[in-house]
Length: 102
Image (cartoon, rainbow, N blue to C red; front, side, top):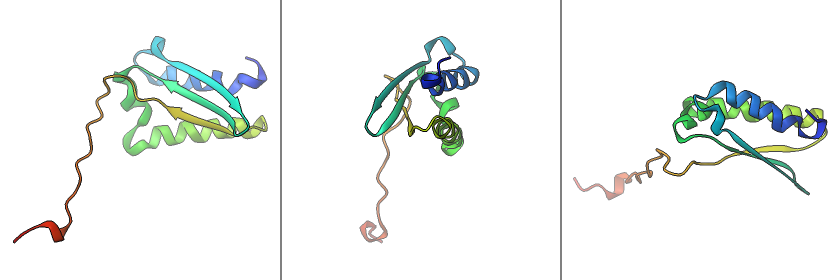
């Protein structure tokens, strides 16, 4: 693993250990003036395992990736792409009490 892509290799290693479809894990790495952007794509069935309860797993992965970036003097961000046909349901808007007629 080369030093400049250690963040990408680490992310692949961690995510593949968490998911049921490790062969579907894809990590793209882009560098620009803002820093490094890692884009993660996983199988639709594995999204829940990557996000975790209330986003806790994704938050932890992002923290680890940022720590590797600090070690390598780079700003590293993680974007988790929603797979095609994901299970995410559209959010329903909550009505306010003013809208309710009693």
